[in-house]
Length: 360
Image 1 (tube, rainbow, N blue to C red):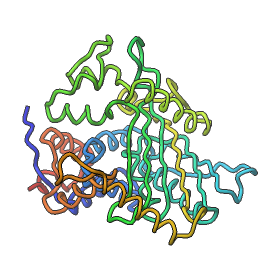
Image 2: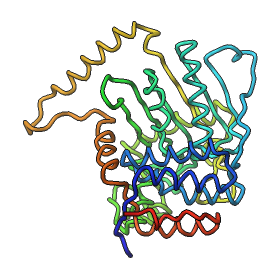
Image 3: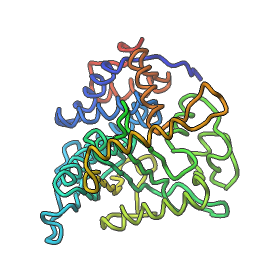
């Protein structure tokens, strides 16, 4: 297998991705949202959730599982009118588009009420959860994003996965060129990283997953077809179950085994549910006080003694910032097998823009 990667500039990846999504019948505005989400994720070094996911997203639009032009609407309830709380129906839209609009609504509510809490049902995979929590931090607010997915993790002893690896992302402004940004799934590793190992022809650590018979494996194909192990074992499993409660159960959407996988059920809407929580720090103290206190918080973190005197403690979000600077200068890597997948979907869409012509 050819595992060599080529490189593409962020600008070229942006225009290329927007063109592909627009070819599906999406509006230009929504195609741009999808392209921005793709590029940001790859720039941060989260390649498991960037352009890697584009072929399957496009395929699901083409086969009708995802609507290219969803009518995202608020589900009205007298208790929620003129309040910080809202429930949206994603109308089977692509998760990027649905989540973008839901986080915008949560931010507006936080700016009005100090707190925004927006639930979404009837959506699909939305890529990296931090794409949306960080939008709050960019506005000087604190953002929390989570979603449920079809069960794919379980404890040793179980014959089937019991819950999804349900990711959660947390972000806050900290007075640095980057926000505090933590994005974690409840599995030892995201399924996307196993997919990326497949594309790169690499083995996976044996504590990432077990095969369908419950045996440890370093084969990314057997691991993806089997059961992912939860991070921290019972801790990750418990957190995943709670995320399913505050997304699927609370939104009146599907939960646990009632959810659909975009890979195993390629022609069906996943019907995932998301939650977006935004908090205005000035609800509790002045902006000046918050900024002074968070500056001190950062100083204390950076003052942590290290065994290597040249090293310093890293804050979540800092590594992504450094990777982004490097990739803006040097380009974004595209594995060889992914180029083949993208070329195939280009043909189906009738695109006159080709990934092979944009690579360095």
